[in-house]
Image (spheres, one colour):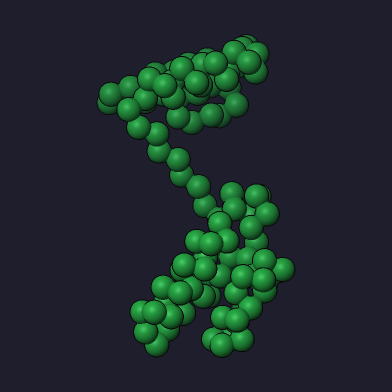
Length: 108
């Protein structure tokens, strides 16, 4: 489903069904969206780090308060300053590698 502000595209089988929502109220749009979700077999949501940043999670690419709080000990031991660098760091063993990812999951 893609919301362009004017229409919502709802995939049906091999094609898209166009549903006009421009003239509908917010409540009507929510009702329509809810109906499509309930009728769906699956929903795919694609997001990137911009969505995390919008939610206030900046530790992925910045050394902010959350990074220092959650990963300060990793920073001191390994020398990286954000979560992306921690994710791609070449740890000495799998325990260190998975310790980082376990901590990352904790802060989500």
